[in-house]
Length: 113
Image 1 (cartoon, rainbow, N blue to C red):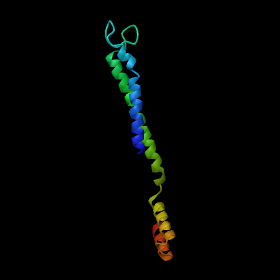
Image 2 (image 1 turned 90 degrees about the vertical axis):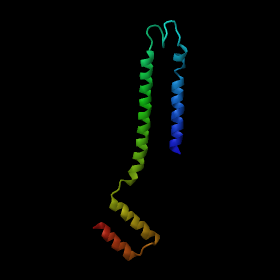
Image 3 (image 1 turned 90 degrees about the horizontal axis):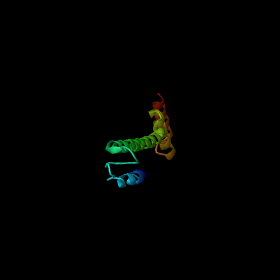
């Protein structure tokens, strides 16, 4: 559900950025043609493509960085050695009364070898 909210916000932000370029579209059809941001040659089609590619890469990189941070933060709780996790499970089972003290001690001794 969090990813859905993030994707929704991402798309709205991208649409907002793309719509901000409306002034450049409005200047199409100037006397010497092309995209003009003032006097001179203007930015041209290549400049527009490069600008969109740059910001697209920045947004995609930001998305993957945030995704990596989320996965890394979830993975910190499971970085215990396998034996430590097994002892935790064994203690939980003993605390719930699923196993007796003798069985607990025997399995604990087996795990500590």
